[in-house]
Structures are given as C-alpha cells and as structure tokens.
Amino acid sequence: MPGTFGDSLKAIFNIPGIAPIFQNYNSSGFQSAMAIGLSRTAPNDKSPDIPNSQRGFLVMRGAGTRANQFYYDGLPLVYPFHADGITSVLNNNTIRSLEVYSGTYSARYGFATGGVIAVEGFKKKNDSVVLNLNTFLVDGYVFKNITKNLNVSVSGRKYYPNYILGRIPDLVPNQTFVSDYSDYQFRINWEIDNHNSLTVSSFGTKDYRHPFSTNKQYEPKKNTMETLNDSLIVDRNFRTDGIQYIWKPFEYVSNTMNISRSYFQERIQNSTYFTDTSKGVLSAAFNGLQKANTLGNDFSEDLRYFEDVMEFNLFKKILKLKAGGQYRETVSSFKGKVIYINENPEMLKITQFILSDPNTNAVMEGDRMVRRQLGYFSEMKLDYKGNVLSFGARRDYYDLSREWKTSPRLMFAKEIDFTKTTFFGGTGKFFQAPPDVSYISKKIGNPNLKMEESQHSNIGIEQKFLSSYSIKLEGYKNTFDNLAVRDNLIYNSSAANINNMVSYMNNQNTELVLQRNVNYSNSMSGWSKGFELMIKKEIPEDSGFFGWISYTNSLTKRNRNQPNLKDSELQAHNELVANHRILYQDVSKDYYTNVYDNGSIEVLKKIV
Image: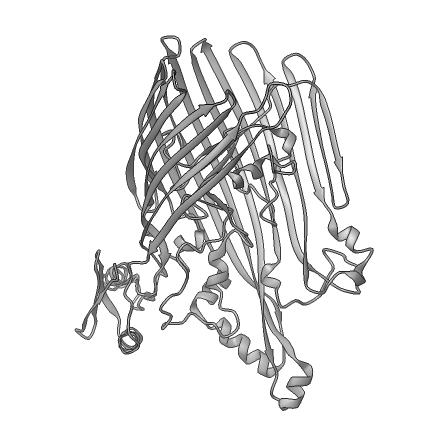
C-alpha cells in the first residue's frame, strides 16, 4: 500500500471520507464520570460534554468514532490500532486484502452506524520469512507450508524506544511520553478436503504509554515518577481467539461459520494537584503543586461472537443469494480504585470532597453489565452484463432495550462498456447498541438506552481512462438519530417510584430507592453530507508506479436536542430537584415534563 510505511491497515486514513483520531483511552466515559480536582458533577453544567467527542480510532463520513466495525478474516478486531493511534496491530505481511465500506454496504454487516473495515489474511502462499529491524522496532513474519493442505503463519512486533532512550536519559525532555507496545498474530489453516476447511486464529497486543523520566534509568514497571499528565498514560491489552470453518458441499454453495472470543483490558488513572496554603503563601509558592490523590479505574470487556453465512451462486454466478446471522454477547465490568492519597489535612479535604461526588463514588463501587445483540439477514445480488443490483434486509435485536429493528439495504451499479463509465449508488438503514458501557451502566448510566440509528445514501460516477487510470466522484448524505449523549436533565423517576410502590405494598422495604440522574439519553441527532474525489493509478502487473490522490469536502452537524436554560431557570430547576422528588417524567420530542411530589409541574423546552 502506498504511503503507509509498511503498515497496510494505515491506508484507510488516506481514503476519502475517513479522518484519523488521536485516541488516548478506549472507554472515555469513565474519565468523564470521575470527578478530578474540584470538577465535581456540576448540576449547573449546561454543556456536560461536546457532541461527537468520544475517543476512538477514526471518523467515517460523520459517524461517531465508536460507530465503526473492524473484522480480520470475519472475526471482530476490537482494537485495530496501538496507543499512538497510527500504528496498526496487524503485521503488514499478514494482510492479503482490505475492504472499506463507508457508504451503503451488505446486509451481512450490522452493529454499526458508521462503516466497516474488513481485512483478509493469507490462507495460501509460498513459504516466506521476513525480518525487519530498526532503531526503535523489530518485527518478524513466517509463513510455512507443512503439507500441501496445511500451513502455519506466525508474526510479531516489538516497539522498544524506552530501551534506546534509557541509554541517553539526559537528552530526553521531561514529561515526554513514550510508547511501548507489542503484538502478535498466529494462524493455522487446514484444507481438510475439497469440501471442508478449518482456520484457527489468535491475535493480540499489549500497549503501554508512559512519561519518560529525565536523569533516571527507565524501568517500565518500576518507574514511580509523578506527572501532571498521567491521564495520558495508557495501559491496555487485548486478545482474540477464533475459528473459521468453511463447508462447500457443491461448487456453487458455501457455508462460513465464525466463532471467536475477544478479551480487552484497560487501566487508567488521573491525579489531582493543588498548592498547600496551610503554611502560608510563601511556603505554597516554594513547594509548588502537590499531588492530593490519584484515582484509577480497571476496565475489562469480554466479547463472544458467532456468525453463520450461507451463500448460493446461481446461473453462472449471475445471481447470488446470501443469508445468515450473528450473535454478540458482551460482558463489561469496571471498578475504581484509590491509588494514592496525600495524608496532608488540606489535601485530605480535597480528596474527601472529590470522593463524595455521586458519579465518582459510583465508579469506585464498580459495575458489571451483560448485553446481547442478535442479527439475521438475507440479500440477493444480480450481476449481468455490467448491471449490478443488490437488495436485502436485516433484523437486529438488542436485549437491554428489548427492541427489534429492520434495516433495508439497496445498492446498484451500471457500467457503460463503450465509454468505461460506471454509475453507482445506494441507500440503507443501520443500527447499533450504545458503544460505551458507561452509557448503559446501572451505576453511572442509563440501561434503558435504545439503539442508535443512521440512514446512509450515496451516488457517484467513475470514469476509467488511459487503460490504468480512473477518476471517481461520489456524493453522500448520512443522517443520525437516537444517538447517546450526556443528559443532565433525565432521571430514573418512573422506575424508582414503581419499585418503591411495590416494596411499600408488600411491606418489604419502606426506604425509598435513590432517585438519580441517569446521565445519558438518546436525544442527540445529526447529519453529515459532502462529496469525495479520487484519482487512482492501478497496480501494474509487473512493477511500476501506482497510488491515488483524493479530496474530501464534507460538513457534519450534531444537535443535542436538550434545553438551553438561563441561569435563573437552571437555579429554579436545581432547587426543585434538590428539595423534591420527581414523581413522573415525560421526555417527548420537544419537551421534558417533570411532575414533583409537591404538585409542581415543570416543562422544559428542547432546542431542536
């Protein structure tokens, strides 16, 4: 791939409509939920977060950074890039092909309101050994044919700037962050016979990004240097193990089954620094900032995945029928912890104030959530003399919201052979469950959130010229609805009151269940539209120049669809919530309506 410096997966950053995102941590909701310093959960915070500000890997045509799906040979790739955000977790030699679906795509793919990146590895090739060694990195790849029908491939990479920089610590500026990561891929492919094949895969990574200490020999797991930027520290790892079984009972019939388990772990921390004024201003100025505390969070996510797809090719592959389904079960858990507390009385007051924050306290207690998604689809593709028509439908189920959604998909292409011109386009619906466990946590989120949805529409033209060149112009418009967003005005009043009434009638418990803000709602909507231009030179058969030039012009908007209260209105609302219980809350398209236990009725108009 051109312009990727030996990392083919990075090519997606050069494709029109895709923008890379610097990602610090994968589960951003925890960091925003934990009050750091004196930034407690503010009831008068009019804009608690920035729309579309999730941390992730990339933005594809205006979708959220967590709205895309990555697959490696049909298995979910939950962590495609290392902590630096620009280096993939796959060895370049393991990648045979790369497909990017940013517009309307097959009904086979669900669980995403953005796009899909599907990576395919080698199952057959000649024996090869590749070793790369440079100043900061070493990687290797081995592909070995054991027999005619059995082969094994192993690859790995180690990035080690800490060992090199450790030799010259005086030349490294203080607070410089250094990445330390490694990854591996392992595969066994067995062509059992002409009708059956089996592939066993395992791939994973370990990431650690840390501040480099000046004048100190670096030891990654023993370095105790304090840093004002420890929220940028990254400590995470993931591993996926999976099996792919392909059955071809007849020449034009095939069935593919994918089973995998992906395990992801992440550890984050953040510290609070203040000046100690208890001994006077001069003493505070002399001693500077002091660490009051360090809070952390341990997060894990366990994804179990199953897919089965049947494909029929009829009439010399003119007509293709495809049907199948997927099941995803995700077990997510988090648990906060106190890493360090300064026993200084002044600093201890600050720490106690921070830990008294409801959201921080909830994160410290931890939570465990299980969510399940089920999808099935069918589609038909007609390909005859340059005319391509594909239409299908998909049904998705999300267990926490107990809702079924239907996603119709339509794609077409018309090639004029005489002029080498192709017209193409498509439209379709897409759904996904809220991507961050902090959104749906019973402790810090809203487990009743519904599926997010989007509508993709695109149309374009591609013209080939000079035998190996082509120019493509494509316009698109994507709309987004029911997006999960931070919401300081939504409460669990109805569920809490029903529970309290049942408990009281059964004499089980007379203590009221705590009414709380559930922090997130599906109120956000938005759209993205634009056009993309690409001029491409095809890969020559032997050797020579190839590559592409692209240009993207797009505009993306988000609307929180929440009230924008004046200071006096916000003060009145906060007083009602602090002194009275909400008996009932109705959230409609245009209004929040709250009924309080003192008979007050509050109507808050949304900005739409």
